[in-house]
Image 1 (cartoon, helix red, strand yellow):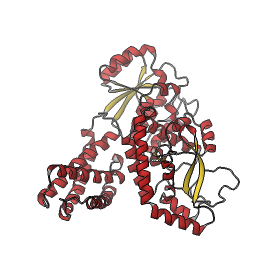
Image 2: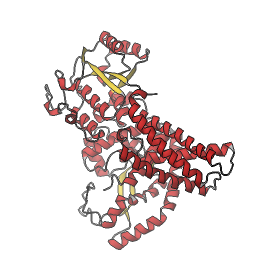
Image 3: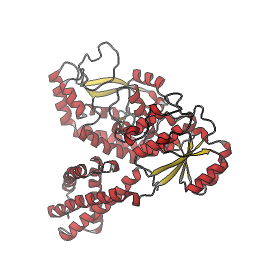
Image 4: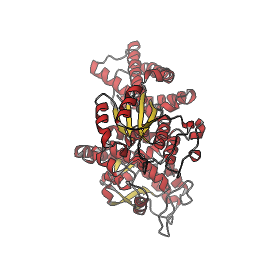
Length: 502
C-alpha cells in the first residue's frame, strides 16, 4: 500500500468504521435477537448496514483527515446517523427484511456513532505512529523543491522531502512556483507560505522572473541542497538517508543516471515524476508539470481504450437516467409551472455545447435566466449574483434542480452522468488557445457531474477553467467505477451543502 498517499488515512478511517459498524449491528442483534435469520441474511444485513452508514459518513465529509475537530465532527456524525437511519429503514421496509427491529437499531446506531467518534480521536492523536512516513529525494531545482514541499504540507501526506539534488542546467526547467504554492495554499484552506513563517514568493532572492529560480537557497525555506546530481551522489544520498521515493522532473532523467535509477528501483526505491507525485497528493494534474513527452509515456488513461467499461457505464447511465427522470417528475412539473408563472419564455433552455471528441450537441436545462439574457449574441460566463438570473432560477440553481433535464441528454447518448463538464463552443475555442492540453478533456463523454465540479467552485474565468482542467485530466487518467462512485457521493454532498451554484 502507498503509505504516503493522502487517501491512505481515509482508507484507514473507513476500515475502522466498517469494523465498528459490523460489530455494532452484531452486538445489537445479540442483545435483542428478535426474529431469527440464517447466516446468509445475517451477513447481508451486516454488509448493508455498513455500506449505508459509511456512505453517509462520506457524504457528510467525515473522512477528511484535515478537518477532524470536536464540534464539527460530532455535529456531522449526528446528521449522518439520522440520514443513515432513514435510508436503512426505507431499504428494510421496501424489501421486507426481517430480523432488525427498532430496539436493535436503537442500540446499534448510537453505539456506532460513539465508537466512530472515539476512533477518530484515537486516529488524530496516534496517526504519526500508525502511518509510516516516506522520505523523498527530488532530482530537480530549488523552485520544484519549494513547490513540492508546499504541496506535501497542504495535502497532509506522509511524504517528507529530505532535500534535492540539483540538475546541471535549469534552463527552461523551473516549475511555475507562484501557481504551485498558491494551489497548495488553496488546498490547505487558504494558508499562504507567509502564514507558516516562510518567505513570500516575491521576496525570494535570485529570481530573474516571477516564475523561475536560478540561484542559491534561501535559508528560510529549510530545504537541503545535496549538490549537483551524478550517479555517485544519487546512490550515496539515497542509501545514506534511507530514501523511499525519488522524484524526477521530466528532463532530469539524464541517460547517465539510467543505470543508477534502475539499480535503485530494483532495491525497492520508488521512482516517480513530478506529475505522478503531485497527482497522488492533490488528486489533480498540475499543468505546470506536464508536457507532451510525459503524456506519451504516462501510466493510466486506460478508459480511453476500455470498450467494456464504456458499455457498462452506458448501461448504468440509461438505468439511472430513467429512474432519475421518473423520481424527479413531480419536482420537474413544479419547476416548470414556477418558471412559466414568473417570466416569459420556454420552460427548457437549449444551449450548444461541445461533447465527446469535440462533437457539438444541444444541452437541456430548466431556464433560470431571463429570455433576453444574451440578446446581443455575446456568450458570457455566469457569475456570482448574476443579474440575468430570475428569482425562480436562483432557487433552481441553488438546489441544482435546473440540471434535471440533462438526464434526457444522457438517454440520448450525448452525455454521461460522470465526466468533464461540457462547455460552450465559443469558450472552448478561446480556452484551447489559452490553456495547454485543453482538448484532452474531450476524450471522454461530458457529464452532468464530474471530478472538477465536486472539487472546485463554479468557474467564471480562464484561470478557473485552467484549475478545473487539472481535475478533469486527473479523471481522464484515473476514470474507473470506484472513482465514479466517489464523484456521485461527493455530488450528494455538494447538493446538500449547496456548493458551486451560480
